[in-house]
Image 1 (cartoon, chains in turn orange, blue):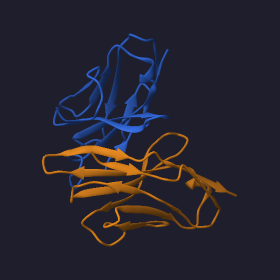
Image 2 (cartoon, rainbow over the protein chains, first blue to last red; image 1 turned 90 degrees about the vertical axis):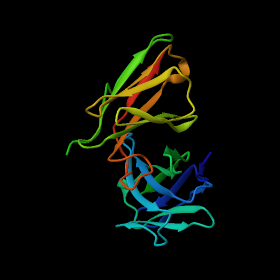
Image 3 (cartoon, each protein chain N blue to C red; image 1 turned 90 degrees about the horizontal axis):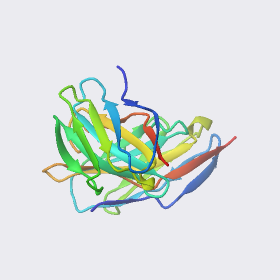
Image 4 (cartoon, rainbow over the protein chains, first blue to last red; image 1 turned 45 degrees about the vertical axis):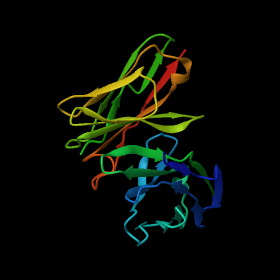
Length: 117
Length: 116
């Protein structure tokens, strides 16, 4: 079974600064996808960024970027120029495909991101 | 394009009852997955339906079941409710099977189930 670990239950950052959220995963599969989801107080899960494991180039989406280290099975999220609207729970997730199908998304426990004004 | 919708948004039931939750995926999406979110266990995968067939199932007892209709709408049923079933139930849809190239999942707002 695959696992996703987020070692930081809570992080705090000053508005306009940069913060990095950590995520490690464990899988024996070679084909998989990694995601960061944001869940604000409204509870609506929103996809922030995704990374295909076969792509070496790190994904970026505006102020959000990832540092994907495949050998280390690490997938951290960097948020630049933090804004008050970034405050939310952030979940790292993995979708692993083993040819016969996938097992759905496996989520980490989440990191609560606080933005200090 | 309308997003994923879930009904009802809130539900209160008592132990022993059964409940049915509904999910309407984004138009054109054929895969629907269900997740349970609790403070203790976090987000856990329940099952995935694609083309009216259950394709994958998470580690949940048989009291949790579901189905998908020809229009891709999905329902999830929990029988003989227990206190521990209190949770936010999230539905997500995607164009193709989870794990495929078009596997980005779009989540609905969830159904908050409280079991008394």
